Image (cartoon, rainbow, N blue to C red):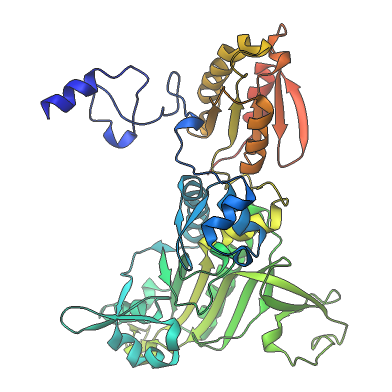
Length: 475
């Protein structure tokens, strides 16, 4: 230990470290954190890049598996790495984007009264046998036994678990309703043919909310409230999602809607009426139907990716587990339930499908892993004298624009040309790429600013850069 401490004290001052180790004063081992003199360097990021197509194909084993844009791009720039069939390592950029998405979800769910919980992934078999889903879910349900022979499944969803939890509360009153409980956790489904990267895998992240109301009328109001929150979420992300009539499937209930993102790679077939706004998954319609059931107008057919799903369950689960509350008359009543899912990792992939070009990722501003990438001059180039200005600009941004602390990367790979690094930055999809090129040597210095989501390129002074970036919103 003493030898380790000796080596630690000998490290140079730039070897700063993670906030988790902030209690250790002498030196901290991590890339530089935000703030003056503590810069996030691109060369220190763990981001395995596979920018040549043949390298990407070797990762997956067969070129035929790379069947969609999001899968190909996420592999190329090192957002994901295959672990096994249908399972992926989520690498640092993806984790940052996902954490931001979860923060937006938290804001929307808590704005309508949602309370966050966390339930075990292991769900006892007896709960699923009580609802008959242990058998009806078929092979998609991943089952296992512990050393004592007790059976479990790895939960693809948690209706049984949450209803059993509510049933265990003997003193629940109508005054506590509606109750909206949600979680964001890993889910598991033994897909027979995983494909499309994060769009259809065996292991994924999902936000699942479960609601408990005192009456069918109140439950329908809560249903509408959650659907409106979903619409607000997708609006904030800039996604043109469509709410469609859907089948209740294995979850059950009496009413269901999907939130679909129309893209060509989508596996769901949708029917939309341009006249009255009717929309439905084709599963709910007669396949020969060509006219809208609401107005008899012609239906337009398209494809979509399901990114959200809502169900009105009624008492399907509460009656099985006796999930009751004391009503206004002091009598026990069954809770009216709803359940509501959002595919968290699926949304990340769907965003790329919808917004990216064939070669470059594009993020909604709120989800971009990093908002700004600064590119300094190549070592030995005529512009190398502006390298120090790049570092100063980094410090000015993180000090003058507080919301961007931790959101700015400095591409310090100065052995590469500015052009090569700009090409990489385009692929990663940073909303703003700022280059210290020839005009950085002007008086005053002007920086080349690429606004990736608008396609505009402008030359701005330091003050102009700060004014532009001050408008950026970060969750």
